Length: 493
Ligand SMILES: *Cc1c(COP(=O)(O)O)cnc(C)c1O
Image 1: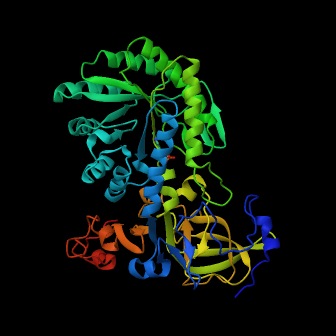
Image 2: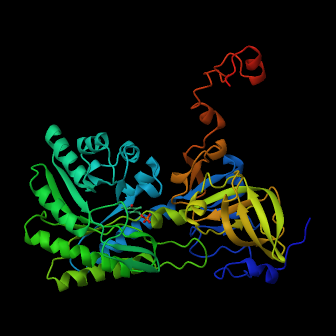
């Protein structure tokens, strides 16, 4: 076994935000579900179930979702925005952004908590409907909703379609007339504000595919006024993701309220118009992130919008918000088994590579966005001093990183279970079968009980899509052995 570099030496490779922990077994507050703790043996416990027990039942990798954490965050978001709006004599609605992670169980938890649901494809709509979400509580997004998707949405009676282009408005005009159904819409406005983490950028136009410019939105509103069966319920904007501050929301609301005021004056907006400010509220992925608590964030945003309304002599519109990540992100913990470890010399020091039995197929965010995560030993507490480590997956790709930088106890060894927190949002939905790796199950845990809410795939599931294999599992070709096929003259050059 190679000797680990002392923490002080390997620190040269660590990013500034990552400090050598006093205890490389501790669970950073805010990064893990509130129920996460260690039992007397040092094993990680979530919602009253020990992670080794979960792995015995469900294998690895497995995405564990703390149900009470999801439900309480959903209730807290609704209360936060509802209370903030009520203090200004207004109302707020909260839509859960289903793209963060949607299954029928999760959709039901959202409805139970009083939330509505946003979808952005026929598939997500099908999940919401299969969960018996009342269609009136569904918002439908997307820059390229296909005609059959719009038809389906209007036919089932979704509450709101967020229109994104002139072409879509004409498609809706035709569909509502053909089906003889009314449809409420919001116009998605590209406010020119883009926000991420602590910064926001405000330009005349944001160079991205979603929504109408402010001028384009005004023309769209005028066009919608001519349509007998399409009702303009209000305006929508969404400025980004993993946002910690309120300044970007204020700037964006300020711009969109200008248009809102003009449309009101022109008598184009419905009574009780809606202003939907989207989602994007940040969570902690590592201890370096310190997101503002939801209630404080809601107060800050709603107070700012109320200010902007007061300046223009406007009544506060019905406010709507679309959190995704901040509802499910922190509730998810992915459990992996450690397979191999090695130390790699890097510029006079070394980095420990810890390979786990998943990777970019179950969490694409590090490869896709350079996203940072953290990790802890789950099956036990480590006993040796922390060493700078990189947790990597099993895929044939050097960018297959799960946790780029983390201090783990240097006695991490094959067979240990490793837990990666904050994987509840945008991991399962972005999962792939790269390298023909089956996607892991999702297991909901609550009060000491666990149940599968999305079953894991098997290799047979993957083979079932391969049209070159018949139902018995054999090759559909007479000779699957290429050497044999060559001899019988069947091989292709
Ligand atoms: C992705 C998205 C959201 C949710 O964003 P989170 O960062 O998960 O809160 C909300 N609204 C729209 C329009 C989105 O595209």
